[in-house]
Each structure stands twice: as structure tokens, then as C-alpha cells.
Length: 255
Ligand SMILES: [Zn+2]
Image 1: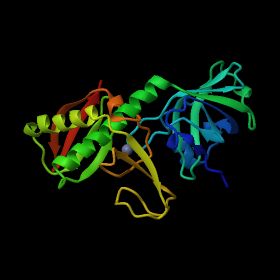
Image 2: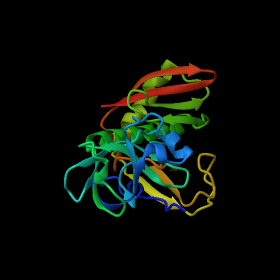
Image 3: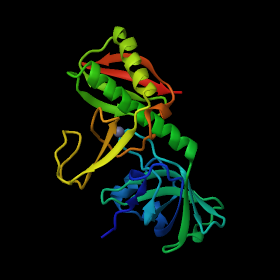
């Protein structure tokens, strides 16, 4: 049985470097089918590395994967991480390749230092928190509209709701978002016991449920990374509001 990777980014999103240990290192071709599937957009020359803990965020919950490096005891070469994915058994897999092309540099049990590409992570966290801020604004302004989808990907970020929103709603929602950013509210992370039924966004029985709240105004099950206060998002701008098949999308960006 694989031991699930300890996902340290869930507890401290500010970690940018960590000393840990290699648990496995292998070519993608030798992975089980379901894990190979996770690497379908990765170059065939890349390998899969797992470590005891990780500070690198795996793609999911509408948030893109981190990138970074994993280096053996601060020596060259480093393993350049291009994509991080979470497997069904809880293992977090780092896909990438050695900076010098020599795969024999890495093996099980080695002590390694992980580093996150900080600027990219900060931007992804800002986009993710911004999505939650829009969620709070919508709960306050239009509590009858149900959130159905959240995407925090650069250039594609958007929050989707059942029901119809029009351009006339845009300045109203924008003003509420600006207010929530200006209030510099804390982003509060908490954990609920396994099996707690939150709503249909969290499946009961999956282990403790991680909840994210913007200043105590909402409660959302979420496994993503966030900035610590709403003021750290920068400015959120609603790019456009569009409608399709009864679903409205608020597309946004952060600057
Ligand atoms: Zn979230």
C-alpha cells in the first residue's frame, strides 16, 4: 500500500522550501495506468518522483499545478518539476526531469530540498482567493444563485452560477468585491471532522474536511492555496459577464 504524501501546502501555504526524502523515482512508462493517465500532457522524457512530504500544489480544485525544483542535498543536478498531480491513493506525484538529463542522480531514500516557484504560486493563490471573494460577494448580493463551478486558472478564471446575470450587475458585484478587498479580511483555514456533511461540494467520509472562509462571512470546502488576507489579492477586476444554457459566468482577473 502506498503511503499518502503529506500535503504540507494544506497547512502552510507560505512554505517555499522544504527538506524531505525521495519515496520513489521512476520513468512514467512504469507507472500504473491511472497514474500514467495523469501524465498524459507531460513529455515522454520526463520521470515521476514522489517524496515523503510536499510543499508543491497538485493541479485540482480549479487551480493549476505548482512548478519548482527538487535537489539532492543542495547539489546539482536538480529535478525540474513541470507538473504535480494527486493520484487516487493520495500519493502526490511530481513529474519532471533532471536538469542535466542524468536520471541516475536520484533514488529512493535520498534527502532532497524542494523549492516552489514562488511568483507563480503567489499569483495562483491570489486568483484562488479572488474567486472566493467573488463567491462571498455573490452570497451577499444574490444569495438565491447557486455556485456551480469555479476556475482559478490564469486567463480563464471565472465563477459560474445557476441563473441569469447581466451587464447591469457588473458594477454592483465589482463594488462589493472592491469593498471586501479593501476591508483586508483574514482568509481563515479550518478543519472539520471526517464525515461532516458540509454541502454537496464536499463528499462525506473523505477524511477531515478543509474549510476556507473569507473573514468568517462564508464557509467553503477547499483544498487550494490562498493569500493570508483579502488585501493581498491586489485588485480584482470583472472582465465580463456571460450566459450560456441558464448558467452565468463572471470572468475575472487580478492585478
Ligand atoms: Zn477554493
